[in-house]
Image (cartoon, rainbow, N blue to C red; front, top):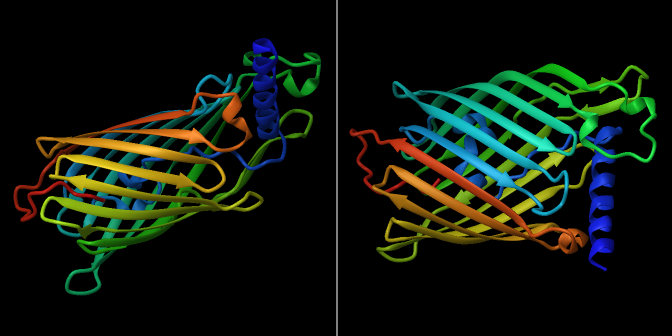
Length: 308
């Protein structure tokens, strides 16, 4: 029985990988702690905290399922003067036989829109390197010409974003890349179809008491030919030191989140996703860890950690 379940899990994963190699849209990385990793989704966020910040994220999705997605990201961002944000992001994403590396430079310019509100407009530009190593898979027909040659292609990236915010709320819209492209193998069969993915985000921070802050947040992702992805989260910040929350990704997973602020400069966060689809029988959930370090601006009045 255990062997049967294992084989079924491998079959499900193989189907997922085969979909990737045909005319489906290229799989995009998934994030549960998107509220702490906003720059990689929206270049307009770059520099808005006013601090020099660096963070690294590691995500292992569908643990126990062979070929399941695994993602690492790095972000460095800061403020130049009063209005300009500069940043660098790097992403390494693995799924099945495919590896995707993206490196982007970020630029943002901030415009006051009211007494307490600002609009930050951002750009990102870089390179997308896609590699497919067919030797990492097992196939019923190893002689199929589709799997005869490994793939290594480099493509440009260009994205835009807007981030409108105050001290208590934010709204954002972005696409990390609007340059669509297809990659073909030697037999003119589509290996991957890269389509633009659009993000809409929002959040609000409210004081429940002197020691508790509450932040509901939402993120939606849109890509042509794929279902809408909707993430809803609710996080509490306790004593400006501990963050606890829950999240739900529509028709995909429910999540638990926890984070700790150390000396107001260092934040470590963890999220666990429990799958609510048919894949729940073949994996042990998803794990995500984020580490964030901020060099605080001594001229800022706010002494509490930023909650978005």
